[in-house]
Image 1: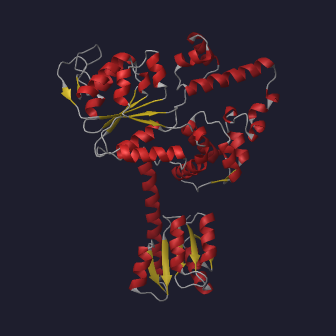
Image 2 (image 1 turned 90 degrees about the horizontal axis):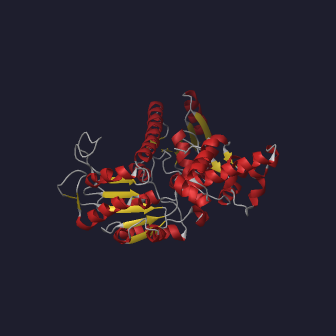
Image 3 (image 1 turned 180 degrees about the vertical axis):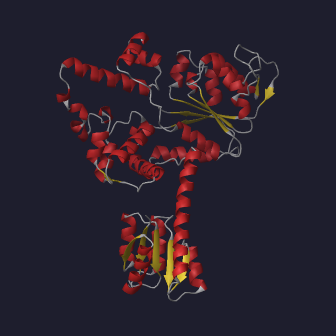
Length: 459
């Protein structure tokens, strides 16, 4: 049921409009002045506003201007007994959906209300669909590190310079790559993504450069590789630190000569591709260990952009959390929930091992499980036990401190071991070999632990 707010200083007009709209089964509220109306618009979610122009305390045009700052998509229908073409044009220029003269014609009023509500629904649906189709979201944050990244993107994107993006898993490296493409001269062409860590080493060359029919057992037809698909556009090599040395050599040649050769082929194919790469690894250490070619590193790192961990920019958490809250609520088709100041403080006190991705999941969980106002108690109750840093004020109230849940010492040890292994696996993007090295156990032993605790990688 659509919720409509009537703003008019004449009680008779308010009562008449309310009766008409409630008869049509709309939910209606009314107020006699613009100042209090703006407070209601800040606190509540309305689908439509009917606003008089000539009012005491605050003029209707002023109410319209201020309301557009609060909710830009909220449709306003302006009503006036002194209607002129100039007034209607001004109302439209300030963002009003329509203008109706007093006394309003009943049919005209109802048709305008219905059309305004339909338009609002279309605007909302379009925003949701655009966000689902396009993965390029706003880079949120006002911290010094984020402002520096935004400035670098503005300066670097229009050039042809290759960029190497570093940062932990979930920090937003892919988003930086997308904005580099969106603001580049290649934005009209494709952005092709390759997750080097997700492709087996024996298949990565075929994925990047393509293959000819019959070049190996399962090559039943010709395949066009990612370099050719990205011709004229941008190729994003995500987690390039996991690429095999043989594939690195071929990528280096492609960057040097702007030519590729398909697996099993002899013909050289010219490609015009801008390469952006990303990794969560310390590339210098990988070079020292012999896992990454130094010459490839220098080819890729014309521009270096480091995306900081969320725990390094906690001042950005309220802005990001509120944005996620609005997005998720809109996707679910529910009124936007409010996050209390104490809840924001609790979120800032958490140890975000999963970075932005973990924060998004946390906000979605809170929206599903909490009431209209998300409180600090909700954050504590629905957080992972490992999410709070030991030094935070909230640490003593986390579920980890509830030792009564364990009947014996072995049960507690299993609990702690499972959480520790899960944390390390997620930190290493479920790279079992690297995690086994980090925690100093044999890989086969780690596999046994994963099976014992029924642990699975989240989608």
